[in-house]
Amino acid sequence: FARSETLKQNAPVHVHFQAEDSGASWCLGADDDTSTACDCKDNPGNCQVAGQGNRVVANGLPSTSRRPYGNVRMSNTFASGTTEFEPIRGLPKNAGSVTLVSPGGDQLQIVLSILGRLRVCGTLVGYESCT
Image (cartoon, rainbow, N blue to C red; front, side, top):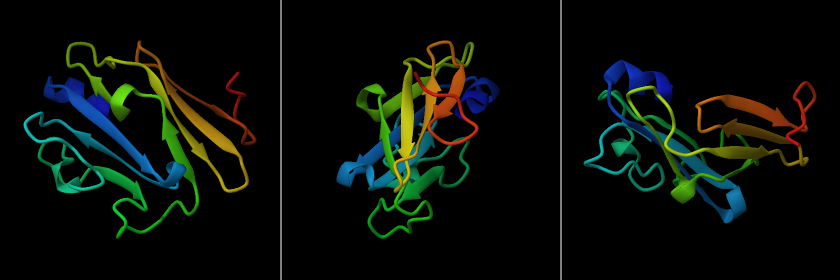
């Protein structure tokens, strides 16, 4: 979504990841307005793309939100928990990954390369190993 919006609008789009409680409570948000920071935890209303509503996926953050993903934990390797897609080619400014871990220990990892390629791997049946 962020990459296609960056190309469509010819403007950068940022994706922000936040986690607390060892990843048990987490959220992510997308934003194209650099004048207001997207904070999916404390100010999710600022997470908007093309002026369209709240672009947030949340699991227990803010603390008043539901937990639609149950006890799934999230962690990420993006510097400062953020990546930005640049508008010329839609490439990310930095590479990184997001890891989701089920209560049973199964993992699913979404890896974003510096060339913008997404790869999904993990320990779940049907996915290649991340090694």
